[in-house]
Image (tube, rainbow over all chains, first blue to last red; front, side, top):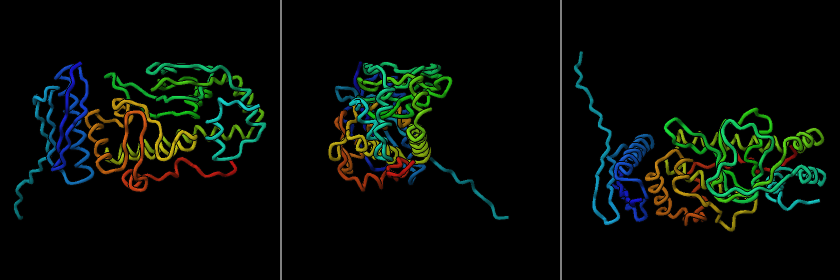
Length: 82
Length: 243
């Protein structure tokens, strides 16, 4: 099975994946990254200040395959004073 | 008669209360065959109505349930000295499976023998009851950790729990204990993706709290690891007292 590496960053906390994981294909790697990104964003939101979370997926030759970004955006609706 | 196969079980119970010679003898006489399972094989399956309970004496096992998608949630890890399915003694059917995480060795206790023990030894019966209560207490901690702790705290809590459990049954060496599982299995236990588990392990390493070579976890800062995991060992009930 192909080997994929998942570098990540939450806020300014970067993590370089030197170990990687074997996954069936790129689509599986993408699903796994999407799941991780959801967890990392939820974790960050529940336990700290919400920040932007990112994952870069590399193949075993170091080529960047995908870059996924997740963030929580809060739009405050304009309010009028009665 | 002393059955060396029951060493870890006796340690697990003795640390919480005193087992009499007669009680140890009764457990030894109730013990049946030694059975081995290879890593990955099922030791019990959901829906089974077992006629014996299995005492783990070597290796590591996991209780689990599957959901419709096929995903697996591990609900407990078991180490030597744990009955993996003592509750199956009284439950009509198992509501979960048990699989061998590593190659494991178990001693089977036929339920007919356990019935005889519980009818003759009320104090020993209470200790076996305590064993299942400890399983329940650990489950509660897992539920709280999964629902309310960050991934970092959750993992730290799990390592604290396993260190103390291993130390109780003489499996720890210094601040190291066997933890021979894959990141995928750890992810199934924590309810996280393997990618997130990998990142979280690296974070615990970067903080200087633990190292893990895939087989053994070494704790480098016990106090800090407990703080990060919001770990309170009360649920393991490690106090020796009459039961």
